[in-house]
Length: 161
Image (cartoon, one colour):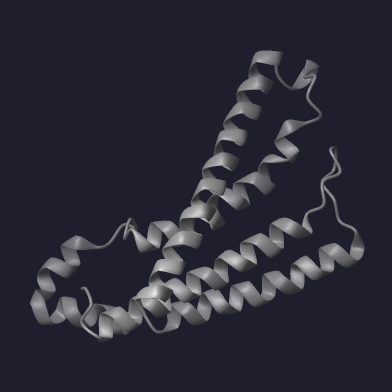
């Protein structure tokens, strides 16, 4: 299990770097557009059209690392009232359905990506294919599913709270 957790951390770290790079790209593109004078006389081919693809990468590629780092916002005020036993069992309630949800989303994103690929769907102005983004987000959903399953195994085996 340690090797599996190490592999999850390594892949999540790489995806997090990609997410940071996409976020930097979004920031630089927005700054360049503003400095160029705005939408009426922009030299850039509608930069806002490529931002949703980058935004999808930022969100999806960052989620597994945030989960591993336990960086999500938790309802501490509620957990504080549960006591030690309640805290231990709080994960039992919400943990099992979450991997199923991410698996469902990932499978459907694979179908959407296949549809984009078959139809040749591209962004409006710079003609970038959209299907790699759908496949990338689907892969991150499956990775997130693995992260949650790892967390459940650690939780149930007493690895951490």
